[in-house]
Amino acid sequence: MNNEQLGFHNFTPKVGIRNSANSDFGTLLMTEERQKAIWAIYVWCRRTDELVDGPNAMHMSSAVLDRWEKRLHDIFHGRPYDMLDAALTHTVYKFPLDIKPFRDMIEGMRMDLRKSRYENFKELYLYCYYVAGTVGLMSVPVMGIAPESAVSAQSIYNAALNLGIGNQLTNILRDVGEDAMRGRVYLPQDELAQFGLCDEDVFSKKVSDGWREFMKEQIARARFYFNQAEEGASQLDKASRWPVWSSLLLYRKILDAIEDNDYDNLTKRAYVGRTKKLLMLPLAYTRAASVPSLVFP
Image 1 (cartoon, rainbow, N blue to C red):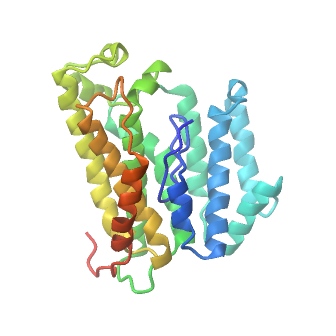
Image 2: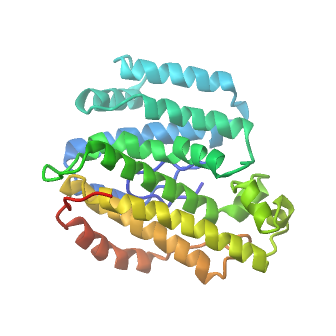
């Protein structure tokens, strides 16, 4: 299970959740109450992921997910099953969390049980929303919106969703080769076909000119979602912006690394070294310290 997640602590299965020391460092800027709340959300997401990708995944079934959803309902109604559930119940009590993104994440787990191909981007987008965009929606009530922000709350939630989509698309592009080893292809089938490609090209791990051109289009799409997320990152409460900006900048570096590998994400895994991550943090801090603009696209 890979560990490289920042910002909204995006839950990012295929199936897996990425976490990072950089993220923990960023959240230290938040109040203690917010830190605990983000941790409670993260733990619930991690436990949800492990139902499908953990040591007992062989016993996974729709019935297990149905029971987990019932347990979620109990958490939101003040009936936690254990101490970890109780942490999320406390978070629900302290912050205006909506149960829908949590339910939708469980639906993403159901999708992973029954689906290993995506006919078009519309289908893939829905999956990315379920397993990653949802965490942005979970986290905004905890991270808070800057008092000086003059844009609508909905615009900020949309930006959080776009960050999750961008992160998940980046995870997918980084992990194409690893996913193929599990018989999974998280790429739009119709767009593969437009470049004369199919599943066999993925499984054969041959980096052709057609593959490079296809990857350029996929990378451009991920960057589009990051661009859409940028303004919202500066509308959050000041203490919450640094980890989010770190996420934006780090994940863009992963896309850069894919390009640096000559678009070979079939036999190589794009990697951002520790030094580059550390050098990125001051820039993220500078962006986070900026005053929220009054105009939001």
